[in-house]
Amino acid sequence: MATRSTPGGTLTYNQDESRVSRLTLLFGALAAVSVAFFRGGHWGFGILIGSVLAWLNFRWLRQGLDAFTEAATAQANQRNVNVPVLTYFKALFRYGLIALAVYVIFRYLNVPVLSMVVGLCALGAATFVVSIHSIVYPQE
Image 1 (cartoon, one colour):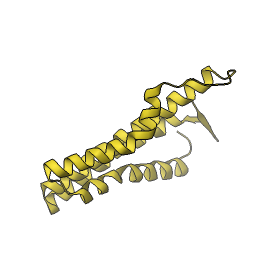
Image 2 (cartoon, helix red, strand yellow):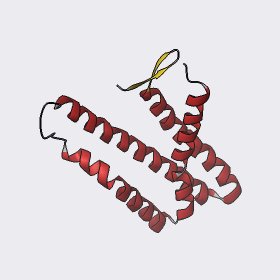
Image 3 (cartoon, one colour):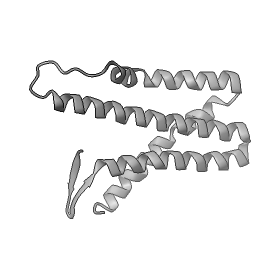
Image 4 (cartoon, helix red, strand yellow):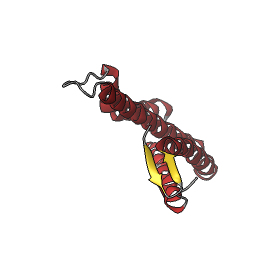
């Protein structure tokens, strides 16, 4: 696994990835509860759905990059690297799958699209918090 150097040693990127993953769901759940209280259940449900979709997007991105890295490392001396087709599918179509899920949920469950888009921002908020944490506390 990749590591970055810090003054006190090394900290794996996996710790930061795990934090981003957990915080995405936590921020989404907290926002969903508070928005449901002030704007109604459909809005809260939309934010929760959006944050879960953002979490899935992050997991698929991580799995795809891990698969690309493993394939490239294992086949370092070969001219052409063979990567599983499913990896390409996840890398290229994850945004399409999220858009399709948002459309279906909007169409059949009458959840506001804007609430799902706001829920997707939970990933950005989690990434921001973990980045600031890594800068402020570089050693752990």
